[in-house]
Length: 507
Figure 1 (cartoon, helix red, strand yellow):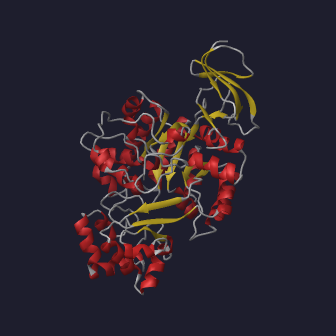
Figure 2: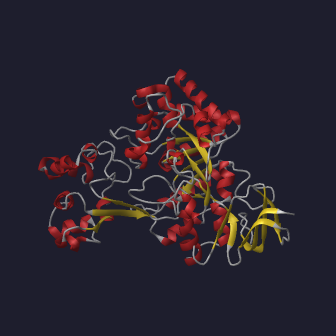
């Protein structure tokens, strides 16, 4: 046979989890034609000796909704072997959208995912409906793109500004169902919701999806049950699952797979991941398909108080975070305001503390870079330690440094996925889906798009917590199966020729 592409002498890791083997891969008309010891001619030949040949990786949780319109490669996921990306997660798609409401819809995505509005303001909205948006995507793509219909967008489209004030009426729910149905018919992979209580708009109000009651969420999920296709993704679903089994109940009621954020190890709650696993095991034993996502990355936020989201949702802190630099400095210097900041972030005198903020918060926030020579002694120290060194309260120690260095002291906050033994268990847990890159989001504070490289380099080659074959399956076939990408994720004749070639000794 004459091939368009012939990959010779590779170590084929086909995505199934079965042992690797030496061989060739022949590609014709965008599909895998043959695998084995091949002798045909080819327009292009690649010698893959010493390299792994595998299915292209799937970035199953990212936020390239806007970026894809000017960056068809969805950088930087593609640089780490991703040939398919899935966005519209956490309820935050950019369609449907009414004319005149584009900027407000962009604000939800901007603030939750830390994508600057200066970037999103350049976006040309040439669509209104979700099918229109998919049509817009279908041009000049450098990677495969899968989309989820976002609950926030749907709710805002139907309810307008009331979407952040009240529950929906039955008629409004029916209109939302129609929008989900239209999107699914046009080719969406499913729908996304959010239960993450840390998802706010720039004004400190929860995004529209969080105003929905269970009746509304289940009604939208029922569209997928009715159509017999698609999955449901939830931002922040782990809290809702632990609290009342919402993710499992949603999957059971709709008959659809639910994936949610996320299974992780937290230094402040060291055994929580074990408790989550026990709940997941119990639900999967009943045949319920509700799976958490997990990332091989350590989750560390890097920030200054010039640009920070660490304290969003706290009533006094939040508007200061959005103020000008001059207003920030005045507020952080004001003793009366400091008392309020202390009450909220140290004594937790708020009705509902945002997720993640607790009494040991300051023990995991440290100074990464101090600007003034006299403050270099604080580098590598936590804010709690600095307060002890100076004989000050937490807020005074923190804000004295912030004000003295004109908001430019660099801090890092990292307490998630740092226990190696726990992470080995999480990454090899069969009922969790590996991914959660958040590609396209949070780039000012953290970067998770290299999750596949970290899995292969750190957890496979260096720490050997799983075989290469298992890791490739986790990056390919597992996500392809869950998201319904039935011609991806495996190297098999007839499958799409999404292929990645890499050096296992250096990647």
